[in-house]
Length: 193
Image (cartoon, rainbow, N blue to C red; front, side):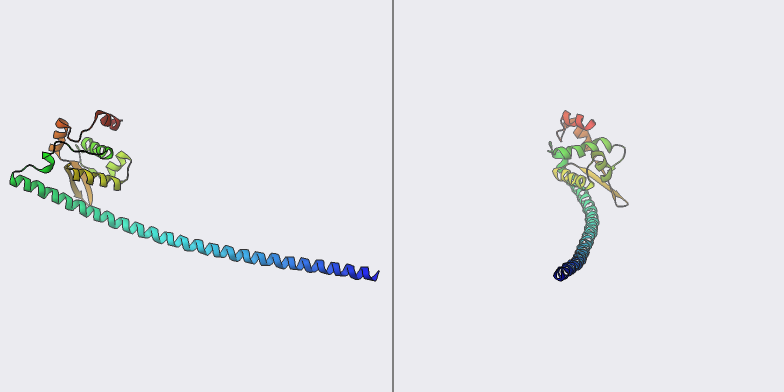
């Protein structure tokens, strides 16, 4: 019987050792898990800081691009005035008034219609045109630039660094008589809705 007692004590001892080693294993796993979480948290913090830095850089670049666009718009307006003045002095018709047809894409036609219908009372800003068409100001600037390049005489005036845009009055009269930009009745009806 002594052997049973000794054997029983050995089993109890190994069970205690096993329980002790399980406790050590659990504690070791817990420490490794905490260390892994801490490492993940640090990586996420690094990524967040990197994203914030990138966002700040993008915002700064956007502001610079906006200022440059404003300056380019002013230069373009002055160049248009010089071209019109030169055409008047030389007695030759300006390019826009000599055109009998201007091809605009659908979005440009929508911008044209906003300017055509909305700028009688007062010139419109990029923001007002963008809101009317539910587009971004950046896209509206592009459409207007394209319209100018195609020969639509858009007039821009600046007040406190805000561009006020309208169509040349004589061009609006010609458009009413000759449909220079080839607006279809369907486009006009869809715009009116």
